[in-house]
Length: 486
Image (cartoon, rainbow, N blue to C red; front, side, top):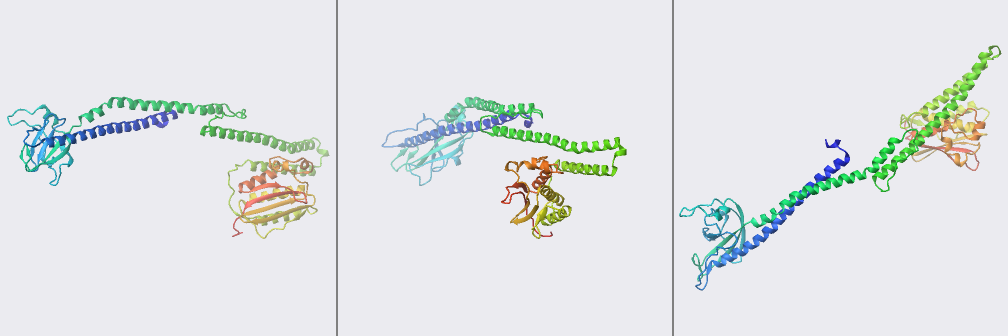
């Protein structure tokens, strides 16, 4: 249920609950701490009273004394044989278990003190049958902490119980009333303050989250206004360097990529339409003229030219279909001999171009890589076809394996590629001015397809700076595979 609430409401509720728990625990600790401090003071006073009563039990030098009855708390005097000798403050008619008020140890000195827990029983009537006093009733059926003090009399000392020697133990019941009253004084402020603090924390959290989410709402509103016709718009970036700023920057970066992708798609569609329109127009014109003047038409030649145009259209269509495949599709893994594929293509080109250029291929016996055999074959074919079209006299193919990397170089001694064009030539439908003049069959997609295949095989393809001999060199890098089963 709470997961359906807005984030600011959920945060406020959670913050309020946490504050309520923490404040309640703090209030409970404060109340207990105050009670313990007050009761500790009560125990100190009870020790003083116990020694006072113990001192007054002894009659010295023939003077008379009496057990004080106006002390703060009730007390019990226990004789050494375990019997209760007397009491005061309401304990005379109170049922107190003897086992809970044991006499002091035999070797106890006058400095001995002890603490016990006493559970009082019912208040009983006196010997005359009179009901117990209110003081005894107030002490009945309760639990007290009793502080004991011992006093040992000599042979010549007279006590209220007779002449010594004897050891008496005085237990004073420490009443918790003062400590309880001090703690109860906090009940009202704590009961009112704890919920108020929790509510204040919840409101503060709600307001803080609502204020913090304003940039997010601004980003949402701007994104809602962006469409394919307004891709140049960007979301506002807050000044605070936090996660929201990172979200805005990432969103703008994504919009940048989307705008570039859309622009590339539009340019790709326009270029594809242009490339398809030329052979289609030529084919249509040729057929219309032939049908209009059938008696003057060389039908075998017309059919041959139309077939050539159809083949070019088919090749261009296949290239376009390949480029529209998702880039995340992984090639079918297989072990491919890159050197064997290169030798096969070089031999084929030598047969197709017997009058030049001259092909050299100092290749190793085997160069294993892993990938899709058909795609790698197409990659090398596109590189070699491109080199063949632009070479003056020579095309050279070399393969070198260095550690876990296989390097393939395709060199032609044609015109070098300007540095500013070395990246652009891999864009779709890109042909340099010199290529437009000399290229008879290229569509501007071969290098783009080759680089796309290299990327899908976790490799790279780039045009590098020409060597001292000039010309153009393309460098392909692919991960080396184990040479087993090649």
